Length: 179
Image (cartoon, rainbow, N blue to C red; front, side, top):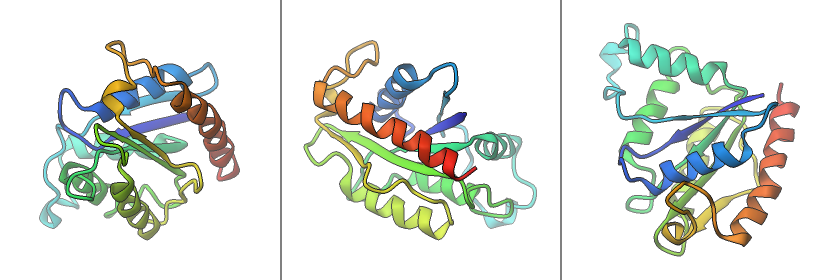
């Protein structure tokens, strides 16, 4: 089984990029691979270019299409998803609509205590509109993420580890049920 973790931030020091790396490190196994995708190189979506997109867009869409499931790892900006993530979603949802039927899971971390709850609600609505089934009841909202990840991108908080140890197998079963 193969997942992509799409990081909804273009910051080099993103907590969510670090969380995605920690997830890939901890839950990537011989039978589950997790590739972390960044969005820094995607051009802004433009309807004028959707039929002849840049090669980086073609490659991004093919990578997501080839995955069995998508783990969305998003920060929260102004109670919603960042523009860089919405841009990637716009590319994924147009012409070759690669997210239709593709199982998704949402997670995110913030320095604050709410752990991206508002962004996740917005992202869930967008994924629903894209016809991507979302694993429900397994929300990963890591508040205070700066204190729960070490410098080597290991999760150090026992309750976060316990929750992830529950939801990651649930996502595997969810993805398998949608194949």
